[in-house]
Amino acid sequence: MSKHMHHPLQNVLKQFWLLALASTLLFNPLRAETTPPNTVLETASREMISAINANHEKIKADPTVVNGLVEEILMPHIDFIAASQWVLGKHWRGASKEQKLEFIRQFRTLLLRFYSTALSEYLTTNTVKEDMFVFLPLRGDTANKQVTVNSEIHAPSGSIIPVKYNMHLTNKGWKVYDVSIEGVSMVTTYRTSFAAEIKQKGLDGLIASLTAQNDKLARKDS
Image 1 (tube, rainbow, N blue to C red):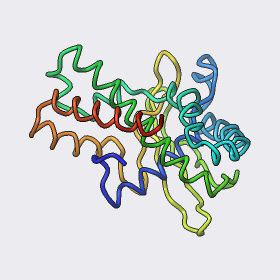
Image 2 (tube, rainbow, N blue to C red; image 1 turned 180 degrees about the horizontal axis):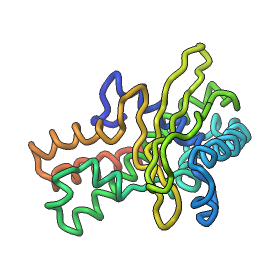
Image 3 (cartoon, one colour; image 1 turned 60 degrees about the vertical axis):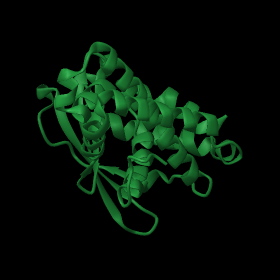
Image 4 (cartoon, rainbow, N blue to C red; image 1 turned 90 degrees about the vertical axis):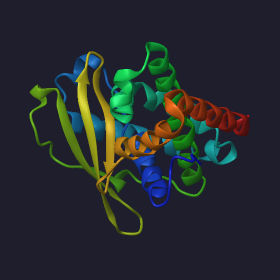
């Protein structure tokens, strides 16, 4: 588990990963400009749920199978450049090109490893029901090229968890750059954690810390 994730945000962000993976944007970029973002997410969630459940036994036998699913299906549809800019805040503007590229690479790897692990742990004992995810009618003007898609997780316990996707239209289609669960933003959470580490160690120190953590997780998976 990432040392940058602290209780109770750990469980919140694990829930984020499950929903984010189940709602991955699987679409043709040309369609993305005419298909409402919430419709794209709703359609993709059904496709993704089927894929996850079809691989349930494989995941139980080998949890690292999730890594490949996440890499292939989810990661291309998250705007890690925009997310990295928001996460680093003022430190992004002062970073060199090399620092920016390395941070994006390590931040992307961190999310891939952390959320793949969280998802595989969930799927060893659960399958995903199609009615677990509900997307609400879209509010806002897509002509602005930036919208918030509201949705809900209908958990097996009966609780309803509100989830908001912040999305914007890029030249490769609609992409997610932040997700908030019960008002807790992924970007804000990491931004606070990283800012504290940058203050102590500098940006290079943060990047070195992320690199060491990713290497450790990679060795654990091998």
